[in-house]
Image (cartoon, rainbow, N blue to C red; front, side, top):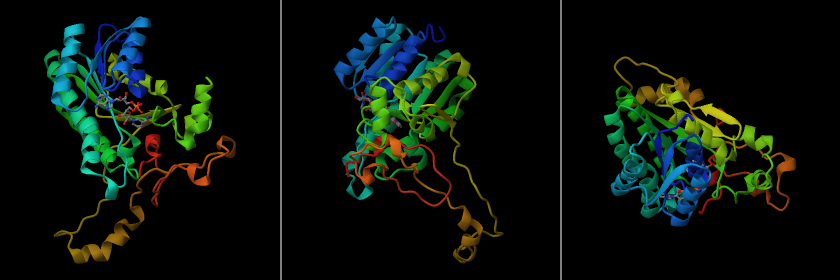
Length: 336
Ligand SMILES: NC(=O)c1ccc[n+]([C@@H]2O[C@H](COP(=O)([O-])OP(=O)(O)OC[C@H]3O[C@@H](n4cnc5c(N)ncnc54)[C@H](O)[C@@H]3O)[C@@H](O)[C@H]2O)c1
């Protein structure tokens, strides 16, 4: 199989998207270190992979501190004798508007997502640079790409992750190591209660395909829909792909752009306050960029009957400008 003989670490892989990644990597022949803070789901994940004929061990430890990163890499080396793939997926949400967000809300999310990605990848790269190969697959979010109401901490972490991926692609290119970000959207524990997605989640629970509106228009599907991309990026087939942010969900696959200047103007001697006041509107006024995501209204036949109109549309802060990309559906039931 395409990942035979390789070893992978997937953080936060006891449930949700991480579990789907771990299973898919194992199905394709990789030995997997499953990681979670929840012992029971980590053990279940390992048992599931083994009963399907795969190889896995569990490390129950919170991603964030360097000690956990060291433990994860040591587990791969001790159990499988090597490490080829690091998938940084572990995540938590502490959604609140800026004026209600505490230091703890901010630090918790930054620690797991941003610091956890940094410490785990740094530790893996110690092995990758010696062997001259390795795959780094980090998990971003539409919120990090576009911003989202109520997610200061999460937007900062996810945008930071993609920023680190771009930097690592540069730093590690000569060492034969790739670094890419996956921008997923999927039904997981955190999205299943969102009214907007209810008919999709219920269809999946009945074993039916989700309606096309969700799978195509919103790019919203199951966790398994995302796993193939992670396995592809981990494989030899993706050797030339690095520094990319690839969106996936349901039937949709997207290549995200990196930020770049959309308009450039020059003023000899520089731009004074007076010059900007006189000219900014004319030069850039029609090209100001939109923020956040916009959501199409739910088609009539997909609306849960008992819900109030405001529950049918995930909250968003649309700004004037071109239509935005995916939602991060996990943010649509905010705590504040
Ligand atoms: N579900 C989506 O639509 C979506 C969209 C964009 C991004 N993401 C990202 O995908 C990743 C997985 O999300 P999910 O929806 O599967 O979430 P989930 O809550 O279903 O699963 C996350 C797992 O991570 C574990 N975890 C939490 N903190 C941890 C820590 N410090 N160390 C180790 N494990 C920890 C949890 O116990 C849980 O099992 C996250 O990074 C999330 O931000 C998800």
